[in-house]
Image 1 (cartoon, helix red, strand yellow):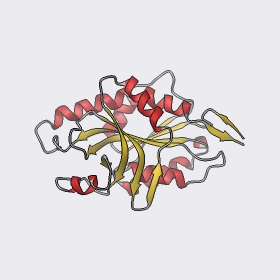
Image 2 (cartoon, helix red, strand yellow):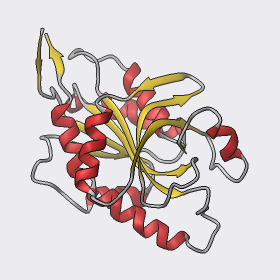
Image 3 (cartoon, rainbow, N blue to C red):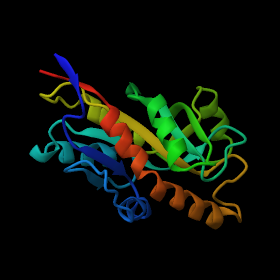
Amino acid sequence: MTATGPRGPLLIACALRIEEVALRSRRHRDAPEGNAVLRTGMGPRAAERSVIRALADPRMRGAAVLATGFCAGLVPGTHPGDLVVATETVDPRGTVTGVGTARLAEALARAVPGRTVHTGPLIGSDHVVRGQERARLRATGAIAVDMESAATLWTAAQLGDPAGPRPVAAVRVIVDAPEHELVRIGTVRGGISAFRVLRAVLPAFYEWHRSSLLPRR
């Protein structure tokens, strides 16, 4: 077997309409052929169902999967508009390691200079995290939480693919942080900032996709 470039398209999964709008509002000349943006709906079950349906499409054979959208930061000092690259995603079913996370973080730093890029575990939840629950989740070692990334990566990794192991990754933009909770008055400004960042990072996603070398039979 020899290493080659990506053997299939890129499936970018998000949960919310506003996230989809950000991702579709900027097309890029380096977009891989056949790539797709998938809006899964909120929550881990919706993400799992949507990813299963999407990857059953013959056009998605060999697709890399990247989960993205907004998240809540767990670590004090994080701010709306900061980026999180998951070294691994964690939920009750287990842990999935992200592929090429160092390269992805570097690409993101180039795409949005001046924004902080955090790397570390991203934990899944089946509900919106509030208040003191942050501390409990932070104690697991996670740096951020969202409702869909872990389910998306777990599902994508478990689904068989004739072309070989599937590259998966998760990138989230912080919209809610310990010192900047959504219930506070700065929410609108933080949300606009996160939207703009998400819209700007597509070139980094495509760069990650190109660099995710896979074995070919």
